[in-house]
Amino acid sequence: LDKVRHVMSLYRGYIHYVASGRSDIRSFADVTKRPYKVYIGKVGTLHHVLMTEMLKAHGITPDDIRKVGGIPNPVAYSDVVRMLQDGQLDVAMLTGPLPYSMAMELAQSPGIRLLNAPEEARAKVIQALPGIGRATIPKGTYKGVDQDIQTGAYMSHMVASSDLPEDFVYRL
Image (tube, rainbow, N blue to C red; front, side, top):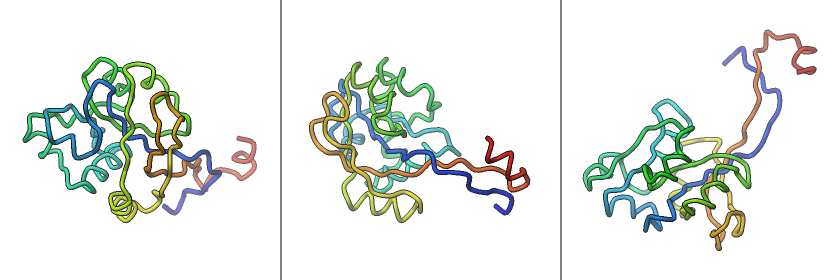
């Protein structure tokens, strides 16, 4: 992108792979053991890429979820919290800083279980998605999370057109 310039780094976005506290999902492998409703994000979004790459790193495709009667659901990210609370999703992915308000809300109701991303899976995601790095969500960050959770993270950045005057971008 010739006309885009980096303005500043904003925050580290931690990838939260979240299972509803009502489910018996303890690992990624569990999503193909029963007919679960799995958030996969809308095609073309960061959330779709992050979720499908992690599933792929565990050898899971949306078709594998369907084969057991599950639903790989491409709903809008803005609907994830409500759908987990209403039982319309069993597992989803959130991205944000620590602690993240959406995860805090879910930890209160219906309760959550964060899924660990083992090193082998994280390495596959990092190889597929340059810019993703290793991260840990420390135990105690959320109600009910009593162990460190291995996951990935990325940096959020502000960018601007290089055609904008430098003084304008500085003041912005």
